Image (cartoon, rainbow, N blue to C red; front, top):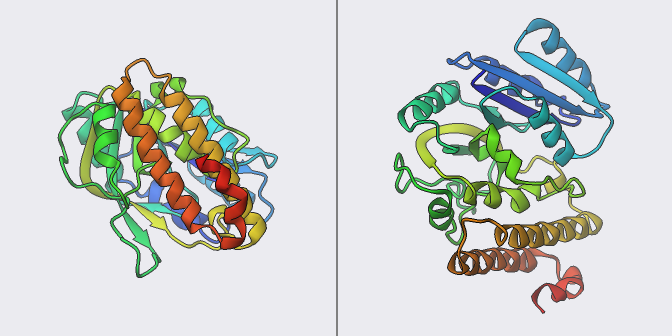
Length: 286
């Protein structure tokens, strides 16, 4: 099996069919779907069971609600593919994503990490719609550390699971932070990138990301939710800083670069908080 596509699912009834259909419509067929139902109560479980009964490539696993971090970890454990792709249940992938990834795997001798481009659905008008895309040095192999430095530009984002195809073996280098409800990708993605020996970016818009989904944990608007997300972001920041420094292939200069970049991102998170919460998180910078 070349690709395992992992879908963490929780109460995704309104989006899930479109997500699954986009995967099952791929022009490249050597893949399996690992759908992790995280205790859904809205009909998601029934949709997953329906697809499981109709399509041999769709494998469904039901668990009690434990959070997306543990769902991803379970998916990785159950996957049999050489490469792992994560798709959020409210998103879709383009029909030739796996075909283009297969070409890159052959052309670049099985890279550890392949980044592709994204299309943002329902994005806020004033935002940079290309903030998840990187089109410089496309199709140019590099190390993970080189990639991380290229991608760490102000205003640009890379720390999301859905932007990459990962070689399955690199997950042995990280410990999932199952206590986080949000921002686990902020904690782990830079570690996965930096520990990769061979990274390639392809110029294919392979992922359709749904912005501003009101049911997403990152979009719930309340002071309590903002407080919880801020605490999770800081935990993710500390984890990334601590574990980046432990990597055997990084130098003091690499560590200094990463700490400066992630502290800048932490400052951006702080600046986005409601004024009523900023006093509570001033200790971030002491």
